[in-house]
Image (cartoon, rainbow, N blue to C red):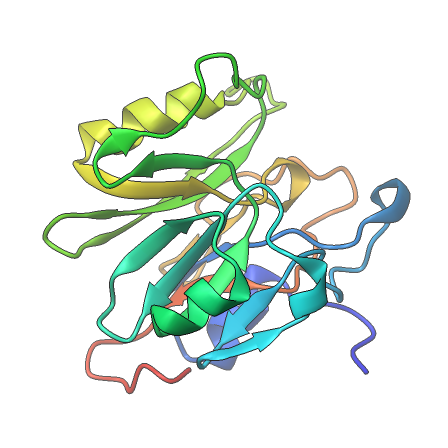
Length: 200
């Protein structure tokens, strides 16, 4: 039984990775959650965990051919597509090259984390600071526009707010919006070193 989650820095270190971002949501009663329990299902090495929790507003996962899938997939669709790693949050921003976000789903200005993929297979990781003097944050539509500018054909919003963190080059490269310090989270997407087996 895990008593707390891990920071993005700790997860990057655990896998000797080069970069990472926070991923799915977690049980967070009154903003005091310890990041240990996801609030939706999680896929790790092709196995589905917490499947009874469902997928929430959207699922994003990477299959055995390194293709990013987005949508409200159920566990059977996840298995059929050979998803190896995946989390839930949402909403889905772009699906198969088309904007998937409803016009009225703005989401307000907040710190944001999101992930996408270009048609050439490159994975795009995005973190936008918010709730700060230098950055008020981003709406869901802002994320869509950024991903389109970078050629994304699929993209999904991840957990944001005080969880939004990106680690690269042995440091966090964004500013945490959390008033209690960098928060532990249950899941992260990490970038492994070139040539490293992808079963991390």
